[in-house]
Image (tube, rainbow, N blue to C red; front, side, top):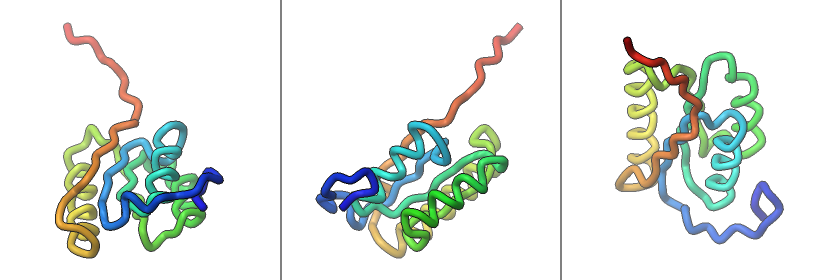
Length: 111
C-alpha cells in the first residue's frame, strides 16, 4: 500500500527521479507518490528543511531516497544532486527518468 493509502502499482520500480523542493508541500507529496510507486529519488531542498526532509526520508524508506541540502540556484547544489542521481542510476536504472521541479523561486526583476 502506498504512503497515501492507495494501492501502488510499482510502475516506477527501477527508475530514478530528482525532486527539487521535495521537503514540503507539493514536492513532498510528489516524493511520497514516487516512493509508493517504487522510484529511487534524490530530493533537493534548502538546508533549513533538512530536519523535515530527514523525517520524510526515514518515513518512506531511506535506502531508496537521498536528501541533498542546498539552493537549486547554486550550481554546486545541482552538481551534488546530479552526482547523487548518477549513483542511484548505476544502482537501479539505466537513465534518469524524471526531474520534478517543485521548488519555489523568487522573481527578482532586473533593472
